Length: 187
Image 1 (cartoon, rainbow, N blue to C red):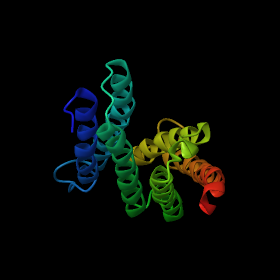
Image 2: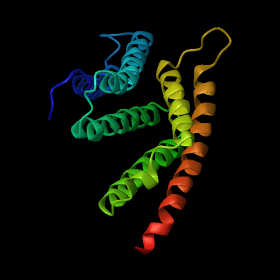
Image 3: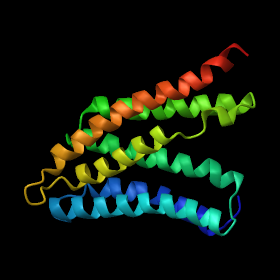
């Protein structure tokens, strides 16, 4: 494992997962609900930004590595899955959204691994639709973690509308990837 800035940022993102999850369960004697939500949201947003930053730095500093290419998407999936499980537990979003998104991530990860084994990994490269799905869920999750309204904007309502959109895009993008892999299933 090369120790470089992009990989350190990815490890930092993984370390932030139990922090933002744990903060949401602090007792009120430690932190008010508002302070918990703001802190957890800020940690999630910082973690999400390190996802962009580690990729940018890896390309800019020419520090791309096979280990980094493996660890980065794992960190992303762990972060999103942890947030979704907590949001369902706190009754801020629907379990069906979490099931669809987490199920798709597991399915597509397995598909990519299988396609790589048969030498067809480029057949299931990340699509624009997958990126739009990721953006919608990465905007929705902080809204749902924050929970409180901002003026007339109800973060739970807006966040859940975005989760619904992300869930639809999740299914569509999964079908797209499966369609790309279908010709290779006969090999």
